[in-house]
Image (cartoon, rainbow, N blue to C red):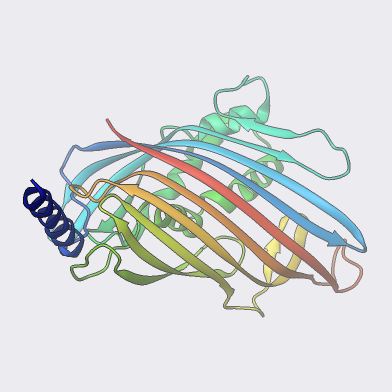
Length: 306
């Protein structure tokens, strides 16, 4: 009996070792007509200290995006994308009431009407089997419904300037890079790591360098480091304000994925960014001003094949 137990243990160890050391090729599998629903919930807290006074802004974003594989090629695929739900809420400092924009809300409110106009407006992304977003086309179609809303030119400009921070090509690329981990170009085994670099493409001139680790057969963990690569870049903010940024930080990502298709089923991301914003003199800013700031972000994404 003892010999049998020892034999069982040896077989288990050999099987475990063989599984752990087996090499796999991570890549996305695309089939024409396959459709996925990506639901994301995100929260962001921005802390600033302006002239000795702490200012805290809280943003909450909820979205649902449908992605459909419309064509495939030897290196990847083209995906048609459209939002079916989109909402944002902003809690500003100074005791001001929260602002909310909800595509499913009462359309007698202009903000909700604007959000609903963004729904079901298709655009496409070209993506490789490794998860590299090569290009985004037709994102300007998101604004095609604005013409029928009866907005003044000022209202259009204000709303578009606010929403474009999250829906311009750069921001969309950054968002899709969160959904599609860029896989290595060689076979790996559990415990192996690889590196990627992404330009966030948002208002802030930030780049994130990620180190990814295949932690088990269905999970990938990422450690990211944020850096400001263009500290002298002048960024345009609302109300005609100009600014420069010097920020850095870290990010933790945990992705649960299907090894058969490469597609994620759940992504959890938490990040902390610290540094300074330099407001430049002009308009409502009487003189150059240094503003310490911190940005805390957390998001969770669920992906379901339809």
